[in-house]
Image (tube, rainbow, N blue to C red; front, top):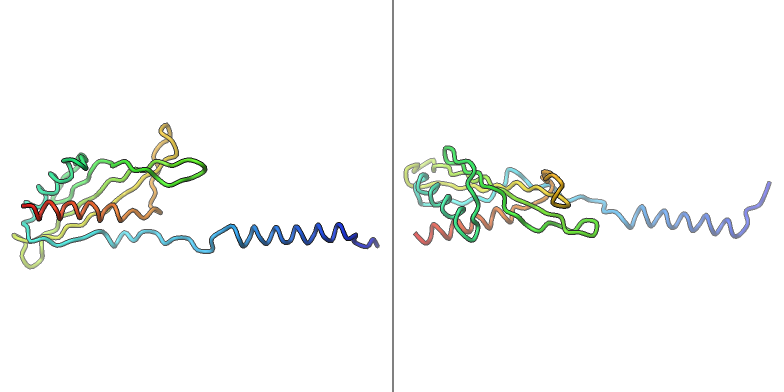
Length: 159
């Protein structure tokens, strides 16, 4: 039976240490929690629901946002996509685009004069322009929904 030489023992120890570094040091043990779709940006307004829908439509479609309203149906508006720089992946910044679903609900106690507005976002990503857009539900972009809701609040306060 051959005795291990000091060089092979040192090699085995080195491989063990390298393996330990790769398994423990390089990866995160926890992944970020996905965005909660049941927690949209939301605010209450002392504005009739139909008037609020028109205010939202004007706010979204005018500068600086200039987003098209692609669908408007019974107090729900879907906007076109807004372009954003994405995250860094593999030596390049990916592209992102986000669209919004804005829902206006009449208030339960005073449906003619008050409403509640919810803004939800949907983000897509891609690496480069020729590639197709892919849904990215793992990205938490609720800050974009909150910013849009703040613009709506500013528009209501001006009137």
